[in-house]
Length: 86
Image (cartoon, rainbow, N blue to C red; front, side, top):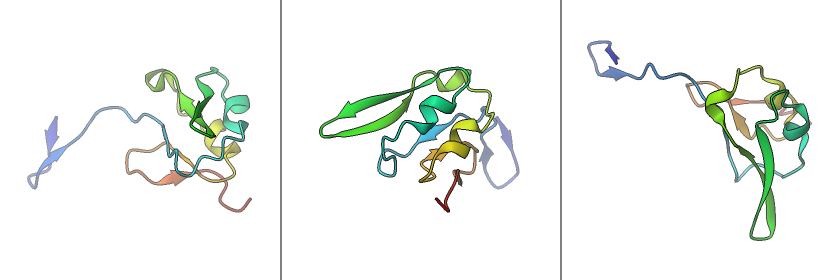
């Protein structure tokens, strides 16, 4: 860990996450992932994407670019990635 004088800066690698509240379960990210790290799982009456091994992600952005609702978070600042115009 490093510090900037005002506090601790987390230097751990960025890992993708999926906002299950936004995820529509369309499966576009599943098809787009070249490493096949994303699956669809059923939770109650909803399907949503789940990243099986986020630490193996190369951050290629193909899943985020395929997501029509910007449910995939790729960067360390927590900003959403993906297609917000579809």
